[in-house]
Every structure is written in structure tokens, then in C-alpha cells.
Length: 315
Image (cartoon, rainbow, N blue to C red):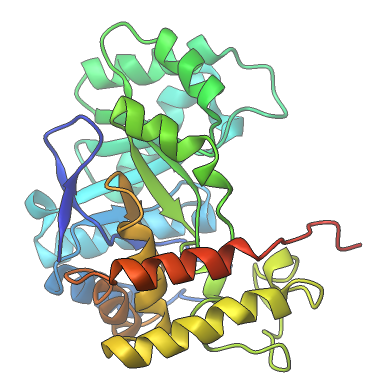
């Protein structure tokens, strides 16, 4: 496993982390013992960065992750990140939401508290929720502040509200067929030394090689309305998948490992957090680190993926 500093902090995290949205009804890992086995295997293969959120299963993901970390006795060796949803961003709710996350995770302090998305449907001032987060840092119950799904202008506003702290990371959608983060977000993060935490780094499974245009998911989960799998888009995506399979054969890797390797070697600020529904999947994801695509192959993937133009106007 390879490791990088989280933003400008001295905290080192694995370049491949574990996202835990799957510990919920949305993705189906609702059995605690199965979740524990996934966390245990992740730690065994060198993953030390675990990402969850209050909204995943309405707290179930936090509960499962916190319980597993405690039972495995690995708290001192891992970095735990969670998120407050945009609807929890009044001053009092930031405090209340953090207290509930701490209780569910069974932690004394959360390593990285992220704002899950801006308060799009509410009128909470940016400085109100950032001041509350900084207060919690000062009280020692949050170590660092991050954001998720924020544009650079919003990060500028958030940082302007902080007296001593700074936003150390931005978690955004980023994968080989959804590369909009490269337009503004990644250059901004590189300039300011922030980490970019890539969620959906395998495009919700579209880049694993499991699916073809003739064999799409049954859409019984959160992929139901995802444009990546729409018949108008997936044939383009599949051109990338075919190349991932070819390169996987060349390197002795799976298509998923090649796709993740491309991401973590695209910029030294990128950390990926694929989910896993089994210990075998988390082990496969971890295998994306510790090696590099050749420059020629990296460029070839870049060029082929640049030809993908997803439309989200699917109805």
C-alpha cells in the first residue's frame, strides 16, 4: 500500500481507502459480521483510511464502522472520516450532529469531519457552519475539516470564515468516465495542497468489467437512475471498459485495479475510496496501489476516456 498526507496535515492515509456507503440498505451490506470482515480485511491489506457519513443508512454505516474498529482494536492505527449532510448545517445542528456521529462511531474524536454537500435547500450562512466546525476542532472532538461536492468558490468562502483552521480536503465524484473534477477542482487542490478524495472511483461498478451493454445492472439499488448505466451512455463507457480489460491482462491486474491506479497516479493529491461488499473486493481494490501504469498506457486510457461524453438528460 502507498500513503499520502491528508492535505497539509501530518496525517498519512492510504491512497486507497474504504468507502462504507455499502453498510446500508442502499447497497445491501446490512449484516454486521459481514461489514466487520470487510473492515478487518481492509486493515490487513494496508488500508488505514475509512470514510462514512451520517446519512448512510441513517447512521448504520457509522455504527458498523465504529463497532468494527473498536472490536478489532485498531483505533490508533486508522483515520476515520465522516460527513454532516447539508441539512444539518445550522450552528446548533452541526454540534448536535457531530455528537451523534461520535456516539455512533464510539470515538472520542473524529479525524476528518466533512460537510457532505452545501446547504442547497436551506439558507445557512457559510460562516455559521464553518464557525461551528472550528469550535469543535478547538474543543478536540474534530481534528480536521473537509468538504464534499464543493466548487472552488465555495471552498474560498469556507476558508475565509475560519480563523485558524483550513479546509484540508474536498471529496468529489471522480473516475475515468466522469472527469469533470479535472477542470477546476483538482488544479485548485494541487495549488493549495488539499487532498481530493474521489468517491465513485469505479463509476458505481461500471468500470469493473462486470457489465456490458447487453448485461446492465437490474437497478435494484442506487444505480437505478445513474446516467452512467443509461443505454444512451453505457456503450461509450464500455469502450473504456474494454481497454481496461486489455491493460489488466497486460499487467496481471483486474479492470478495477487498472481504473483505480489511473486515478491515484493522475495527481499526487488524489485518494480513492471505493466501496466493497466482500473481503475479496476490498483486497482487490487495495491491489490498485503499489505499482504504476506506464506513461504510454496512462495516456492511452486518458485519450480513450476523453471520448466519453455522458448526457444526463435521459428523460
